[in-house]
Image (cartoon, rainbow, N blue to C red):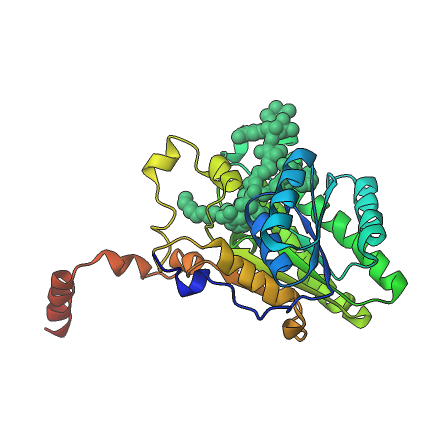
Length: 291
Ligand SMILES: CCCCCCCCCCC/C=C/C(=O)SCCNC(=O)CCNC(=O)[C@H](O)C(C)(C)COP(=O)(O)OP(=O)(O)OC[C@H]1O[C@@H](n2cnc3c(N)ncnc32)[C@H](O)[C@@H]1OP(=O)(O)O
Ligand SMILES: NC(=O)C1=CN([C@@H]2O[C@H](COP(=O)(O)OP(=O)(O)OC[C@H]3O[C@@H](n4cnc5c(N)ncnc54)[C@H](OP(=O)(O)O)[C@@H]3O)[C@@H](O)[C@H]2O)C=CC1
């Protein structure tokens, strides 16, 4: 079967030539998809997370698949000293950093009153603290070296509106969105752009196992609440990420781009649920109203 146009690579060959990109959580899921495409476009990529075996397996596969330069570095983003080592190792290997992608995250569904304070901590520490740790370490480096750079934060659609049952994640992602918009202004003078992507549902093992465990998975279709009636493809997210970190997006700063098939708006419009009405029902309604 032919690949759908939205699932095809978008940018021209060499669009990211000469750039060095750090992707936190780059060994799995959407981080891996972005890394693959960055490598295909000519970037050097450093992937980092806690599990070195996973990172090294991904790096080996992507070297074979793309012929690109990818380095695996173990780093728990909650620990600032490890983040500083990640920055130092990247400079040692590639001589520079051009882009930071804050993609690492943790999440699970739960009624908030069931959570311990540690459960809240573990998510906020990975998502919010992890993002500001990496941002601070890389930002300080850029400012000291008088070098421009781009920070891409992966948030979620509920970062702006909140969501029940994923409250630690919603709280933390809202903070990351505030970080994005605040630094877009404050660090623009150093040539540092801050942008974000807010994805809707993109099936990954990490997200699906924690957000749609059984018996929920068999009862719930994540595509059903999406007006376009499908989930996202990894390549279309990678396309957007590659564009936002490329020089083609040089004038985009402080923007959060939503890529969710219209899902977040679906719950918002007062009359959206009238989608359920049949054509016969509309005929009856029209007749009654016009009478
Ligand atoms: C309704 C239809 C909607 C359709 C639309 C779908 C749109 C999707 C939008 C998705 C948006 C965002 C997605 C994501 O962020 S996905 C990323 C998912 N990936 C990950 O989470 C990867 C990393 N995660 C992990 O490593 C672990 O899961 C994590 C660290 C988060 C937790 O691991 P672990 O349990 O090993 O951690 P700890 O042992 O350190 O535990 C810390 C405390 O947390 C408590 N805990 C853990 N799990 C739960 C749970 N399920 N419920 C309640 N509490 C939990 C644990 O008990 C510890 O607390 P205590 O010490 O007090 O017991
Ligand atoms: N998939 C989806 O539908 C959506 C995803 N998102 C966002 O997309 C991003 C990627 O998620 P996805 O690919 O689905 O899920 P994954 O679980 O595959 O990705 C999360 C990554 O974060 C890493 N990570 C977790 N904790 C830490 C830590 N303390 N230090 C360093 N790395 C860590 C994990 O690696 P390791 O365990 O080795 O540390 C893993 O590689 C996240 O920001 C998520 O919130 C947003 C909306 C929807």
